Structure formats: C-alpha cells, structure tokens
Figure 1 (cartoon, rainbow, N blue to C red):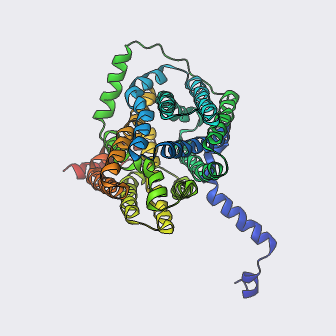
Figure 2 (tube, rainbow, N blue to C red; figure 1 turned 90 degrees about the horizontal axis):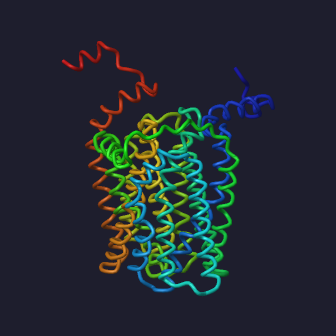
Figure 3 (tube, rainbow, N blue to C red; figure 1 turned 90 degrees about the vertical axis):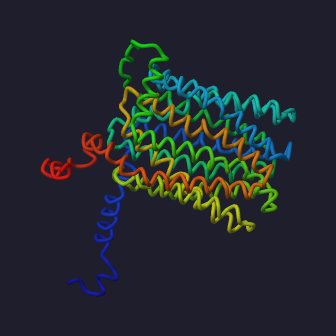
Length: 451
C-alpha cells in the first residue's frame, strides 16, 4: 500500500502516467480533427464565423439605430430568411446533383461580396433601410444553397462515418466559440467606431474559409446522371422525410422551435436598449452569454462517444430553452438576464445539434442533400415567419411578454415530442443495429416480445 507521503507527493513518472491516462480518456472528444479536410474546414470556418456573427449583431443594431422599430427588426430578418424557405427543397436537389465543395466555394464567395457591399455603403454613410433589405434578401438566397451544401459536405470531409457525430459536435463548438467572440467584438467595434467596420471584417474573414476549401483533397465519387426530373427528385425527398417517423417528428419540433423560439435574437436590441437600459455593449454581452451557454452544450456533445441517448436530449433541450426564455422575459436586471441567456443558449444548441446528428446518422447518402435542405427549411425557413411574428407581437404587447409566450410554445413542443419517443425509437432501432451503434435484440427475446 502506498504511503501517505507518496499519495500526497507523487513521483514525476506517476504524474506523467496520470496525464497520459487523462489524455487517453478525452482523446475521443477531438477524433474528427484527425481528418485533414475537416481540420482545414475547422480553421477557416472558425475565422469566418466570427465575422458572420459580427455582421448579424451590427445589422440588428444598425436597423434599430436608424428606425428604433422592433417591427422593422422583424421585417429585415424576415426578408433575409424567406428565400431559404422558398428555395431550400430545390437547393437540396441541386446539391445532390453537384460537386458539394464547388457549391460551397461559390456560396462563400458571394457571401463575401455581400458583406463588402454592406461595408462600402455603411462606411460611406449612404446606407438606408431599403439597401439593408435588398442585401439581406441576397444573403438569404446564398444561404438557401450554402446550408444544405455545408451540412451534406460534412460526410465527405470525415471519411470514417463513426467520426461524423463528433465532427458535427465540434462544428457546433466552432459555431458557438464564434457566437461568444463575434457579438462581444461587434459591441466593442460599434462602440468605438461604427457598424461598417464589422461588415468589412466579416467580408475579409470569408477569405479564410474559401482558401481552406481550395486546399482540400476530396475524393469525389462520379456524380450519377439523374434519370428523373428535378420535380420527381424533390417529391422523392419529401416522401422520404414525411414518411419516416424519426426525421418527420424531429423536423416538426425543430420547425416549431425555429418559428417560436429562435426569433428571440431579433428582439435582443430592444431588450438591450429599452428593457435593460444599455447600449451596443449590452447587446454584445447578451449574445455572448447565449454563446457561452451554447459552447458549454457543444463541449458536452463533443465528449459523447456515440449518438446513443441523443434522442431524449431533444425534448429536454426544448424544455430548457423554452423555460429560459420565459424567465428571461421577467428579468429587469442585466446580471440575471445574462445568467438566463446561458440556459437559453444551452438548450438552443443542444436541441439543434442533437437533431442534426441524428438526422445525419439516419439519412442514406443518395438523399442527404435533399433531407438536409428540409432541415435548412425547418431551421432557416421558419425563422423568417417567426421574426415577423416576434416583431409584430413585440410592437403590440412588448418584447418581454413576447418571449414569455414564445418560450411557452417551445415547452409545449418539447412535451409533445416526449410522447412520441417510443415510436421514434422503434423505427430508428433497425438502422442503428445495421450501423453497429446498438446490438441486435436476440431472436428469442424478439419472439417473446411479439407474443
């Protein structure tokens, strides 16, 4: 037995052994980064996303500064997202027919142009609401193709499908590091200069992700010549999504959360300015707190070894997200609002990433682009209606009561999803068994259960 002195003062080799043991225990958390293409994507996208979040905050604050209207905040957000809702199914078919890396190079290049145009107009002090509206629509058109392309390209960057769930979780971590850094940085930049510099930084940041895409060596399988029309392929994708209970139920809840819950971000300038009596820095802190909660959620998902158990996290996340929004609506103190934003960010990211991971695991490769286009439509497509609804409700009953109502809807959605879990698991089991995620039920047990 080791002496008390040895336990209190371990030898150097014992410390080294303990460190190696800890490293082995957590090495699985970053296993997707062993793939060169994903490492390139991780580096380039991290830089680009910081700029993207700066532009989101700067755009909201610019609209609010120019108009002081929560209704126009919702209108601009609606205009920027409605193209995704309308075009996502068509975009999914085109993504399935195209080289996904080339699609992303084009979308990222066009997004860079959009940000640089915003920067030029803002820095020359000539920007107005009409120009913001047009450029927001342009970004929405780009996102309709970029999001399904990016989601379906993930499986090509990570050659080992067993690492796919880890790659999605790491990608979520990357998004939320940017969500944490970008809004805070935007708040500082706006406070010392103007929104235009945020747009310029964003435009330049796209260079990183474009370069990373050009540097990738992706073995592209020969694209199969389509034997059916685009309409038939769209119908085939819809039939699959609507007829498969797990994906249909996940997307229905996700659409509800996007419609009622996600638009809380549109109202953040109102909370920062009117409710909490702050400025651009307060808006940055609120969005940064949500990003911190989302980052904690992402790290918890990175540590998972398997997708097993993720299904039940979807309704739990909806309850945490909705509950956080309801309580946030009651808060009139900055410190309490920041604390509640941690839970809002945690629940939002947990549900989003768990949904994405399960769908990516279940969907067959030949339908990936189309299915992820419906995921995009549920996420980005319902949000514009939610933004318009949130802006109108806030104009009518005030921002605090609006988030209380929308948060309550998310709670109801989470409870509904919980009642559907048995049916979801029954249809998922054969696929999970085929992929080796869970062990098959022994035949005698199946026969006994059937009696």
